[in-house]
Length: 67
Image (cartoon, rainbow, N blue to C red):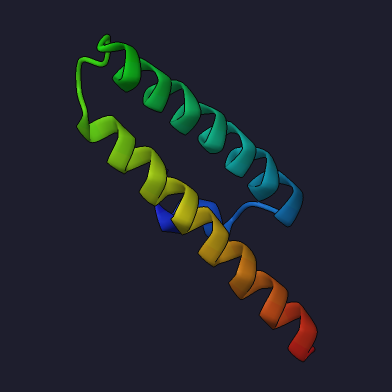
């Protein structure tokens, strides 16, 4: 999901997406540890997705605080 799509979501929806992304990251790390991970780039993608969601959440919180 790109940043433009994430900006359209509410903070609650973003928190749900963040939880899903963290769960996906955990599963990917587990697969990497057991040697069953086919594409190691997925770990990086999940980590960056979580960071993107956190950034947008912080931006929305700052905007709400400044109003």
